[in-house]
Image 1 (cartoon, rainbow, N blue to C red):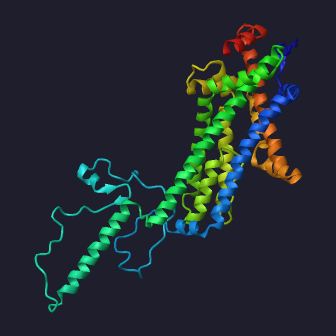
Image 2: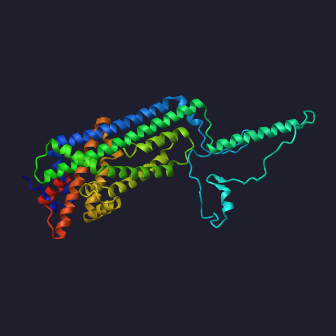
Image 3: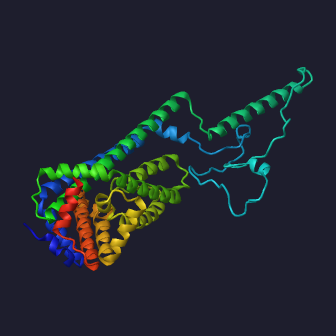
Length: 420
């Protein structure tokens, strides 16, 4: 029987917490290496799928041609009638101005009906439809005018129809290919999200059960894997989903900010795919020709993502202990607990962000290859999950001691028995 729980309140420095976490990590190598293998398999599958998709996009000329024909911006109705008129090409993706400070917010409803999300469209007169009363003789010379008028009207109808579909000019075959591609990518992305939620819920649940059993001196058997998996799937799926949704939203907002003005459809599509996969793996959306934008994006994303992850550092353990809390209450409680040992929490998060990030991936790849880097980072990710669980129990002990309560073996036994 061990007395790990008696020394939790005595852990004060970051080095003490990390050493304590290493003791627990190496005390159960099979369990934690198995969890590392699950993360390794998931990340390898996601990154391999990303590479296959990139190679397909690069090698398929028909797909490049399809992307080049996608014009998501409205062109003037008489663009075809005046091919010599030079038009300015607009970005592939841009933020539409819905309302600004210089708009008249006190204008009437009739004035607002004349506006759309795509700009100001002049309102046509009610009885402005051209009516042809009779046919003209070919000798009078007005037949050509009539035909040109009909041609202009036909072009305008086509332009207006294309405007409704945002300028998407595709044949049936191209439309079928695009529909199949969008459906396939959506289904694959849904499976990636499902796999991410399942694996991380299992891993976090098993880590919690293993650490608690180790602290109270119970033998950690294969039953802990099953119990931890059940607890994780029962209590942590919503937490993992919320964390992914927040990180994905941050990534997309930063992507729009830095890459929203890219005109090349092909490059933007590749960037979009890589941005969607960033919350799942350690990948960088690096494409030649946009080094400046990507460098700024990666720097900003690293800072913002680290801050978001820091706010969620203790949320998993709080959710397991009390699943009745709302998401806001969980985040608030986690921030309060970290504030009791703020300096140590910041140092642990900095170590984690560096060692599990893309820079460490590059260093590890140069040392032992890409597979070696993925293996090491998967093990480090599990190790830092263990570290945050130890940190959680440390701050709980300090909080109980400050309030004159006891937080020891009996409380931990009641905790783990109550979860079953």
